[in-house]
Amino acid sequence: MAKNQLNCIGVLTSGGDAPGMNAAIRAVVRRGLAKGLQVKGIMKGYEGLIDEQIKDMQAHDVSDTIQKGGTVLYTARCKEMRTEEGVRRAAENCLKHGIEGLVVIGGDGSFRGAEALANHGINVVGVPGTIDLDISCTEYTIGFDTAVNTAMEAIDKVRDTSTSHERCSIIEVMGRNAGYIALWCGIANGAEDILLPEKYDYDEQKIIDNIIENRRRGKAHHIIVNAEGIGHSASMARRIEAATGIDTRATILGHMQRGGSPTAKDRVYASVMGCMAVDVLCEGKTKRVIGYKNGHFQDFDIMEGLAMEKHIDDYEVEIASSLSHNYNKYDQVFGGEFAE
Ligand code: ATP
Image 1: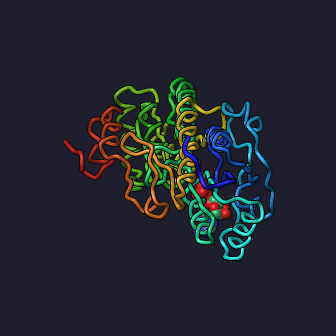
Image 2: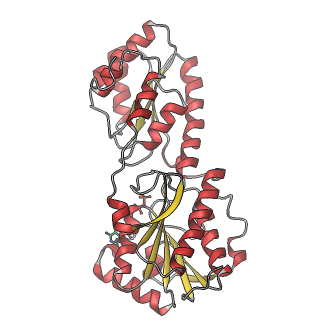
Image 3: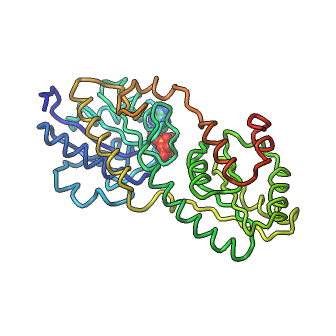
């Protein structure tokens, strides 16, 4: 392994927790130790950096964690870090504890905090940890795969009971303002309708017409996967039931999607990204974020990485629609873009 100029690095998790964060922490700790570094774990994200909740990490501190959901370092949303005084204190505490390089595992907000710290002389590298997949420079974020699989299994179960009772079911999945989890679940669960914040035109009558048409053709169930960014599933269910006369229920999957044992993909990718973050710091780089793009793990400038263009794939959206047996609805859902 290449020799490095750093003596001590820190690692923290920040923002929403995501399955696979522990694999990333484990990788940072063990890669760092293997490179002869001292590694410090910072509890509760930036809150722990400001309050000095900092502890030495040894290899055994991360044993028996790779298979666990959540984060053994805990996480938090820290208002103080959004202030100049908070950033200054966080940077001072890094210096006080000898932390020359910091690995921040979290979402875009956490990376903005990292960038602010870098402006105070701390070398920083971000590792994308969020179930939402909403970080522009990367096609993969830690936790997305597990969250999608958890939601998919839950939706399968709702579908069983929905079919038995000939109901319409609206199932709301997480993702904040991004529709990636909804799109993946929509395809994986064979949903009749998928409502994505990036695409939805809020014309509920089209959905109602679809439900009525599907029922006329003999479909027993109607699954609508609704994204958190659209929300209001319960009121939508009441309106659909009133308009169609079909028993309609809303299920909001909520935080169950953030928990559970990470999938193999989340464990492996998080391990690679955690190691790479240490390697990047050891190369003397700072203000970097690790991403997975075009089949490769790469590092990007944090601000450039966050500013890159990223879109829901229109072809995947079109496929989701074409597989849902609503053969005539492309133009309804997508404004005619894919109409035959
Ligand atoms: P998720 O996608 O899971 O919500 P996130 O990292 O985007 O993760 P945020 O709550 O946006 O979650 O950010 C996490 C923390 O990062 C904040 O609580 C705050 O402490 C810090 N942070 C966010 N934005 C900034 C900023 N502009 N400057 C300094 N610190 C920030």
